[in-house]
Image 1 (cartoon, rainbow, N blue to C red):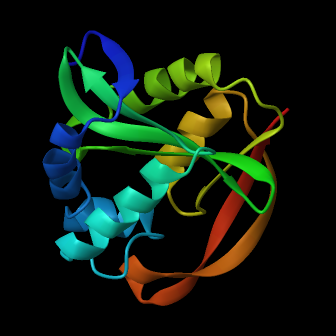
Image 2: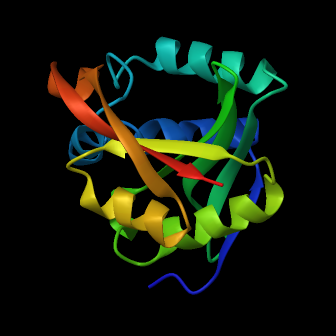
Length: 158
């Protein structure tokens, strides 16, 4: 069980472990809106270069008891600031995501702040609503991980 959760800036040395986290088939299916091919390291590296070079993106790794257990970020999309996070499946159900979101919200003070999750991802929706996000609607989008259009819930923190 993780006792302490902290955030720190993303470093080059973190990329290998994050790539492995984001290849877990069960986690990929749950997240739904993922890379077209989670096993494509070149595409992952190119994506990470783009987002790390974007001054409107704030990337952090999630540390659980001093070890990288996930990632969390804020970014601007169509003029709205949004958050996203990923926690390694080994640490699901331990409160890591909720604590990481709370820490990020102390660092990213832009409001309103948006988030979204696959509508059937009850755990992620619970993390976000506990952090104060409120559902404001739904959208249908193509989920690479499921090879289908699915519903996602859009949430806002005012």
